[in-house]
Structure formats: C-alpha cells, structure tokens
Length: 390
Image 1 (cartoon, rainbow, N blue to C red):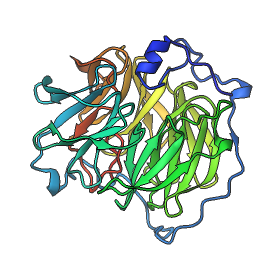
Image 2 (spheres, helix red, strand yellow; image 1 turned 120 degrees about the horizontal axis):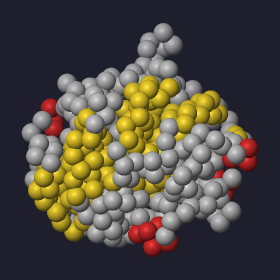
Image 3 (cartoon, rainbow, N blue to C red; image 1 turned 90 degrees about the horizontal axis):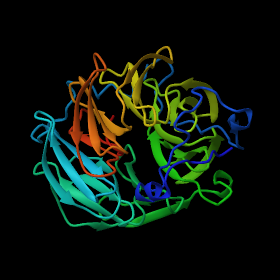
Image 4 (cartoon, rainbow, N blue to C red; image 1 turned 90 degrees about the vertical axis):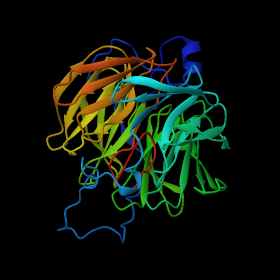
C-alpha cells in the first residue's frame, strides 16, 4: 500500500518529488495492508565469479582507513554539496568547516557522484537534464554533459557501464561511461509501478560478484533486481512504503534497504527476493552508510533528526544520535571519525563524531542540500551515488 506524502507541494517540486511520510509516525508499527509481499520472481542465476563457499566475503575489505588509492592521494579532501533549491554546489574544506567555493550548476542538482576511476565528480542536474563534471584536484566545474533525467548515477563494478537512474521517467539508462552514448534504456516493467504508472526508481546497490544490481522504487514500494549483462529486470519484491537507499551486508548475502515511510530498514534476501527482517530505526529512514571498519551501518532518519547505528552482526540498533534538523545523504571521512550529512530541509550540513555521536558542527549552505559527497574516500573504485566504494 502506498502511503500519502505530506508537506507543501512547492517543497516537493523543489526537491524532485522527495516528500516524506507523517512527521510523527508510530515507529516500527506497520499496518497489515503495508506488509511486504513477493512478486513473481525467479532466484538469481548463479555467478561463475562467485568465490568458493568456504572463502569468506567482505565487500568492505578495501574501504578501510588505510585503503586510499594512490590515484587519489594528491586530491585535496573536500565536501561537495548540491543545493537543489539554489541550483548551486557549495564546496567545504573539512579541516576548517568553511565553505571555500560555490558555483551555479544545472537545474535541481540531486547528487554529486564520483566516477568509477575516481578522477571526476558528476553533479546530477535532474531537471536540467545534464551532468556537470568537477575536477576534484581544482574543485572547479567543467562543461555540462547532456543526459536525460539524471536523478542518480551509478557505475557497474567492472566500470563498463554508466547507469543513469531516471526517476521521473521510470527508466534505467545504461550508457557508455566515456562518451555517454545510450547503450540500452530499461523501462521499469508495469508490475513494479504504482497506480499512476510511476515507479520512482532512484537508488541502487551491487552484489558482491558484480553481476547484479538491486534498485529501489520509491513511489511504488518495490525493490527490483537487474541482471547487468542482459540489462533486464529478473525479479521484484514489494516492501511497501517508500524504499530509498540500499547497502549490501559485509558478507554480500543480504541487502539493507532504508524505508522512509516505514521508518526503518528491511533486510532482503536478494537471491530469492524475500524480506527476512524489518528493523525499526527512526522517522523517515533515508540514507545508509557503512562505518569505515565495516561493522556498523549508519542510518539517517530525515524526519526524526537522528542517526541510528545498526550492528551488521546482530542486526540490532545499538545507538541513536539525535541532533535535530533533517539528515539526508552524505558519507564517512577517510579516517572514519566523522559522518557528514546534508540537512535537506534546513539549508545546512551536519558533521557527527562517529565515536560519540556528538554533533561537531552545523554548516550553513544553499537551499535544499541533498546528495553530499565527501571526496576522496578509500576504495579501489567507485560504483557511484555519493560514494559507494569497493
């Protein structure tokens, strides 16, 4: 059952349809009609690239504090904040917490996305239908690249595909990551859309073997599975509510999905497309960020003004940091000591101490800050969004 979004229509339009549920929800309580159900999905085909069963998998093995790639060691650390209402990007020096640059970009910038080789950042100008490349060594923007409806942007783990998540069009566009020519356009099938014909496809994650993408459909309440070789949907799961960000468990066996209307996180068996567990976190659960040591998952609760700390091993919330505002998207510092998040409805950025949960700083930025990227971060390559590394 799709729940009705509350809030001013103007704000919804300004932020690209990202309205949220009731500001004072019953955390963890889900109506019977909202309980998830599976669609007609076949199990994912086995991958020849999968490791032997006795070989442990850790998808965050190469994203520790000492894993900064040589190719980015000369890049100054900056925080890039896309402001969806102001149509600007603010650049913050994390050493001083000062905004050191600001410049205009295309209409409704949603996320700042590192390229697969981590040498370029792309601003997703959703309504402007362009990408603005940024040179991270200078922090300066280049000429815009025409791309239709770039709400979000990902890269296949092997780097061969740029994957544009076209939320407005209910499409996933597979493009050449160098020329940006369209290779294939995948329309989200009708069975995974809502009664108005929309899916709201907008966030994604990749399996450990790099063969499969899992994507969330915020408007319809579905999670879909996509084969990256055929570029086709191979299954779906209806979790209800408004599913948003996704992150793989360290062992790659399940994917975690933040659900903004359900106020918590679903644990999903992506092979069989089944919800194994639901973990209540806070109001408006939205973004998911693994700690630098890969032991916990930080869950931003956009309507609750808080971050929940979820233990990967026990699947339990072990701490909650409440500081107000509207924490949305961001990332973890290279050394793992800070969590940076945009304040979507408050024109600010939050810096949190990951050891104590204390709010270190609020930084004023432009209107409607969204997919903040702290860059560079540890990892061998980027799979997109605000910094999904392996």
